[in-house]
Amino acid sequence: MKTMTPSDLDRIAEAVASAEKTTAGEIVCVLAPEVSDYRETPLAWAAIAALVLPAGALFAGLRPELPARLFGGWTIGHHAALDAAILSALSTYIAVQAVVFVLAALVVSIPPVRRALTPGALKAARVRRAAMEQFLARGLHLTRGRTGVLIFAALAERRVEVIADEGVYQAAPNTVWDEVVADLVAGLKRDAIADGFIAAVARAGHILAAHVPPRPDDRNELSDGLTILPGR
Image (cartoon, rainbow, N blue to C red; front, side):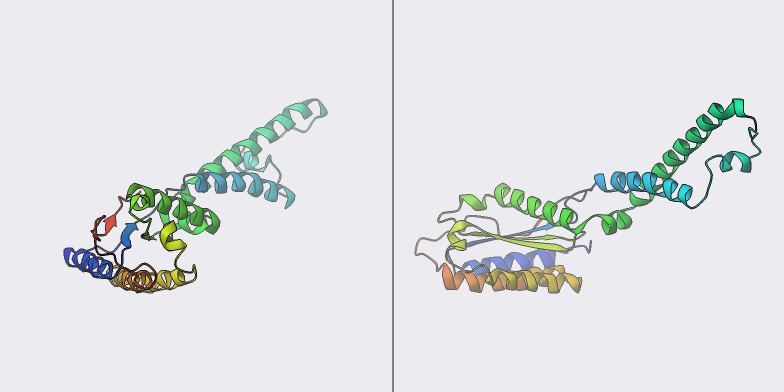
């Protein structure tokens, strides 16, 4: 993850404070390097490889006793040893499966490989869950009027979530939040994280100002600064 400088953090906090002057809404920004370690991904791919590759080799004509022959093992040529030959073949097949499982698990455990092989639907679900957890943890559901908006970015997953509380959800159409997502994604694609958040905050501020105008007794209920979650 690109290092966020103190200047970047100050710029984001200033953008949030400026946007909130025009609305009764509250905007909270959260950045996660990665929301999950996806431990099940290496195990799933290792299991698939262990089931498919040895079976595929068998159907391709590779006989189970071939590894033993390659290393100079004895072969059995009489009928009485048929049971021993079957047992040897099965043992070899199981050993190959175990080796394939371990090797596949190690390869898929490499972070870039693991991310690439994790299904998009799983990543989307984990990011959505992490965003909801942050929405509750930051107290957005406790604001007066239920007008909180969370802007959440998960860098490793390359996903953005914008969650508006029910006070905003009822006032503003859902489609407008796609514009906030697009602004943040555009910044992240340029590796300009701070610029992306600032653009998204400004867009969210315009939306909130139009649908949730400020009240005379408004006060800042939540922190304006960007929260950066620890990496996995």
